[in-house]
Image (cartoon, rainbow, N blue to C red; front, side):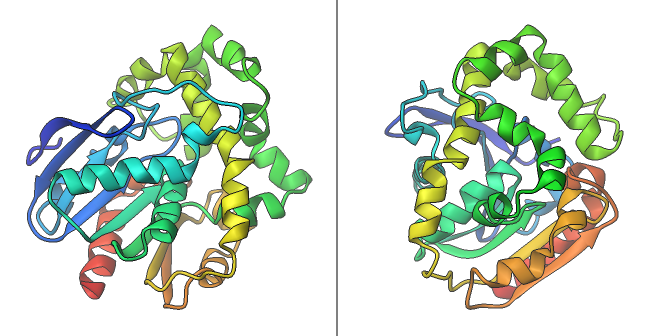
Length: 291
């Protein structure tokens, strides 16, 4: 795992971001989802580093990166602020332009990153998500049942924090095994569970979702007519919620003037862990085709 990488705490304006850095070629940033951290890329990072210089941070509030308290407007965990952290990390390593791939919450940070820093992102790959605005707009009983955690985590502090902190391992495992359909996380789950036991990180992750239901939507609505001008790739699990509820390629095509390509893998939510060979092949093919 991460054989070709070094570990580093990168200073940013708001705090230190933990990340792994290694490889050769054009830079590729990998952003993790909930309730995970950078370890979610462990099965594919080494192969990717043979083709790209790979930068894998823990998002603010997650893993080993800095934590801020929530604020009334949830600005501290807006995707805009989280995207700024990523820019500072990339610039720390001396790069101006880069590829970015994000899974779950990391995909939402990656989307905002591509919107706010249009001259820096060469191409975008999103894993098992559709745009936040589209997903909230599709809310009905089916969506609310499948994504009940969205509506639980956005409740005012400290309601979800108190419930989750009583048994954070139970909550996280429920997310892992329910969203993957029983995939075996045994070899890696402690990498996720240990930092998530910290109350401050439970709070940070709730703030991430609260921002997603408030300030992030405001930003997205303001930018709705400003389409991206870069290639976008979508990878999703055809057995998962995105595959059942949405038409990812058609939806993402509304957000960029360039071609959207994509593939459905025979799995559920955690595509990089459930189907690593297929995921890494798709990422390499996509990013090398636009470099």
